[in-house]
Length: 350
Ligand SMILES: Cc1cc2nc3c(=O)[nH]c(=O)nc-3n(C[C@H](O)[C@H](O)[C@H](O)COP(=O)(O)O)c2cc1C
Image (cartoon, rainbow, N blue to C red; front, side, top):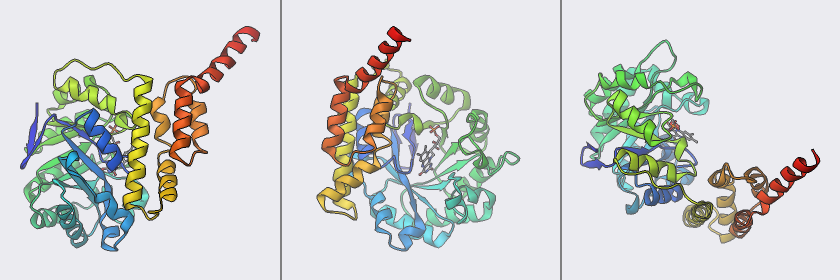
């Protein structure tokens, strides 16, 4: 199974979602190696921030050949500014430019960007048209179903985007006002399928190979995009990729493997920070990277006894060596055993 977006072959038809503070270069390298999705995306990039020369935003557009095919996702509510940033995406080597019309958070929507564009179909179409005209690489759009439950706006919009030359559309099957509440409604993806002939990617609540196959079968979408299920868990994405390819699902990783990959993730994040961050100085770059991953490192060992204790301990970590020591202690059962001891004490005395 695979599909094409212009010159890009998306094989397998499993995509890593754009996720702010998650889908960065370090994580994408790990995901590509372990899971091998058919297409990945950067975190979203503010076109207005790029317009104002924000270095912190520009570095999100750095990509390497090992990650291809890769789309850079941009957001904004001004067609000229979006064109300027789309051209820069091309210059940075993006294989595809993805326009975000799905972000529902107020800080984005109040600027007329992200999901706010679902309320302004003319402007949304104008932006897509302008970007398609400006760049040579394929342009895709990622939408939610609509702004509120009352209006399933996505099919009509998608038709307009297709007419304007967009070559792929992704539907996160929730309404903007819904945030992440409730389940994604995959019937909406099936309805979108009837609206457009360009590749349609379904998104929302895919966590397993079974989910992915069901979404593909039930909705007729060409590909599935996975977000939260892959955070600190490239093996979940690997299982989805293998399932969609019709292969046996590999065994889940051992604890030791998860810890090694968590440390590699951190090492790559430090490298990225050293090469692109405001604090090129080694120590500051290291602190910045360790802090940025404080939330994600513990997710690698989620579900193991003592994981909560380790998560609390990691809040105080500032260096790679500290995180490494904690994780290796964890592997040796130091955190788990105190939990186990407490449990056995309760069993004896309780
Ligand atoms: C931490 C986080 C950051 C996200 N950032 C973006 C983003 O930058 N651009 C975007 O289009 N969607 C973003 N999303 C939404 C995801 O791409 C995806 O549409 C959503 O999580 C639903 O898919 P899932 O159920 O597989 O997680 C983000 C989601 C999460 C959880």
